[in-house]
Length: 208
Image (cartoon, rainbow, N blue to C red):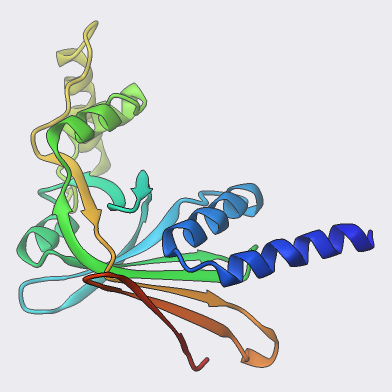
């Protein structure tokens, strides 16, 4: 038992000393996928419209790496419109099981068509059809209308692959700032922040 505890502490110490924010994210993400009950890839996405008025919602991370963090959406919905008008965003991962948060901020760019096509092809058929049937974020007079539209799209694409709608694609957030927050007793939390520079990343600590 003592050896297992020591191995866990040694692993935590290595993680806390890591100087690559992407490697640190990967390590925590792997742990979250093992410990979170549902949707370990869920993240809060904060955007603002052209006038700077903010909004936030939960989305799912669908790709990540040193080039950024990817999610997908309808470009004609509210968040898509806000990101196209004001291409900056903030992300927040909150993994309660790990007592950890990660905050990411940076500019946003659309993914290329090949990347969007490849991901769309992995979605369930009903999800693909839903992307065609839904006018995301627009008023819906009654649920029956959406169900009728779904049935019409289902008939339209019967017995053939569902192509990606031209208004549906992904965005990539390229981080300029990444903060790793660790919950500690008595609110004496540990906060590490990485800020992108021309030569790499500057690292520092923040008061809790």
